[in-house]
Image (cartoon, rainbow, N blue to C red; front, side, top):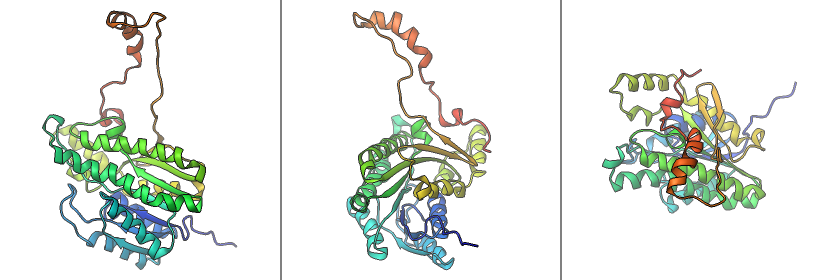
Length: 307
């Protein structure tokens, strides 16, 4: 009887924000599947303050104690220098890089008319700039070796919408576009890039308000969804079993896996003589309105209990 080789045997993967929550679950699963893991985490608070080497080191130690191979890294994804150092940790310690999971993130929620520049900039820096910097640092290695896989964490806050998260939503929708562009630009080098929109209880979710009954019910639903369920999809997307999957956005909600739509035309009108305000109002708007996207939030769209 043959022994099955673990799905990620000897692949080298960087997981950012891997000290807690989804990132930790992904790193642990990859270690179990035979990957050599760079466990990156700055060790900051959920809003980005401070630094602590403990979370990354604890996860790396947990992987090695279980017989896997891992190294901790505490560089920041929010600067090119930090991102390059993260990837160099993989190269120097393990000799190559096969996968990147862009998971690091912070929250600075505020209603848009009250959001200040620092709250905007800090979230964009970690999520969007961080995903770009780390991906860009790995790209030459992927190109030269003729393969590699990116998994980026997006969010339905950006894909659909949510209150008080203009910074986070803008960054997460930007990540979806970044992933699509990477998939297009690097397909010739057999490099894949996909997004996951995760639903799972995490340290960041725990910072969301829970004052109204609706908010309490939403958080209760989130608590029933586990980071380990997201980790399984992330590990699959990094593996050779997903070699023909690229440029996609998958939502993971409990035991549900959904393909999210990406913008395409859904309705059109034309006028041989062109348009003006009156004709747009009288003719175009009635024909197009049926295709308008409602002003919904993520909880309005995903309003059933997770499976």
